[in-house]
Image (tube, rainbow, N blue to C red):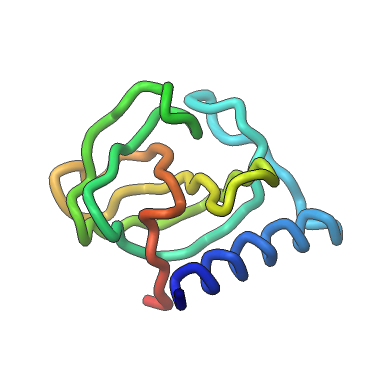
Length: 112
């Protein structure tokens, strides 16, 4: 329940920032999605596919094991789902250094 509240608060903060004048940027060429800049360190809560875009139909770039550390730099939210997609750079594990998208339900953020 606490995870749901935190994720809901994160999504609400991102949407509020966008509505109140937060800048929307275009992600690099691998994805044409508009996103809200969002820097947050975190880790995966379970094994999850790193995707080339913010869609389960996009190409998988690799699998991130549970506990893989990532740094998010972008949050994409369609306004419909409970969760959102994070554009992340992998900072530990077999895919360290890779950048891609992961589903927000499997992201657990922390301060450092």
